[in-house]
Image (tube, rainbow, N blue to C red; front, side, top):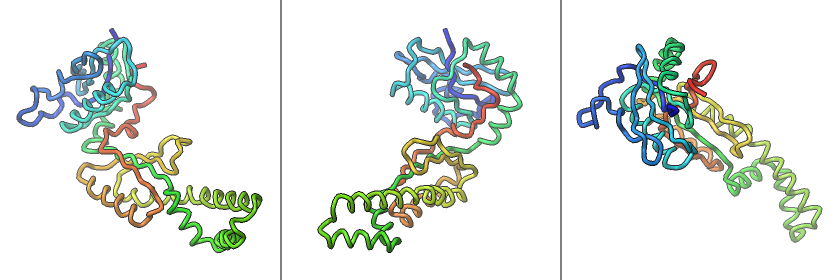
Amino acid sequence: MSTYIYGIIRSPHPNPPDGARNTNGIDGMDGIGEPPRPVRIVRRGELAALVSDAPGDLKPKQRDLLAHHNVLSEAGILGAVLPMRFGSLAPDDEAVLTVLAERADHYAERLCALDSRVEYNVKASHNERAVLHQVLAENPELRAMVEANQLAGGGDHEQKLQLGEKVSATVRAREAGDADHVRRALEPTAEAACPGPEGTGWLADISFLVHREAAAGFLSAVAELRVDQPHLDLRVRGPLPPYSFVDPGPAEPAG
């Protein structure tokens, strides 16, 4: 049976607070699968991996995505963790231990770099009504076109088409500038920033690495950005395990 990998931690991981479920805090908790596979810790030297048996029909089902996240979240409370993406597999526990030995220095460095850090993902889009109002306020030529069309009872088909294309082009031109503004406004409260994939439909999709003690300051900066830029709709997810900042090295720990 394949081994499912949740993440990499130090060995030993810091002791859990009083009242935790057992001496490891994570060992034995519910993992992915139906019924849930218990999580176990496999150790090699100064490193360890959080793993469980992998179900034969592994798919990104909601309950399994949540279980994966819960394991990493609990591990993150107890100490530094390098989270693996959902679906990371190895042929068996021994293959995991081999990778821990081969990449020990790299994983140790990343655990140190991510200790007490979490990820916040910020996605931004335009509030269509608000951005249109702002574009018209800032562009006299466009505003004059709108007023002329209104005086003409809305204008003919060609005038409406020309106005629509002009408005769309002006709004698109703002997207890059607004995306850059989001990044510049939030970077001072974060330690690193990582852009998300292009073509997602968001004008900005950025993950920020934030020290736990600085999380309140980061969220305050988001709140200020919402007030200062009301034409932006901001969606924030976090705190999350720092997926975007793992930098696993030449390849993932398992295929």
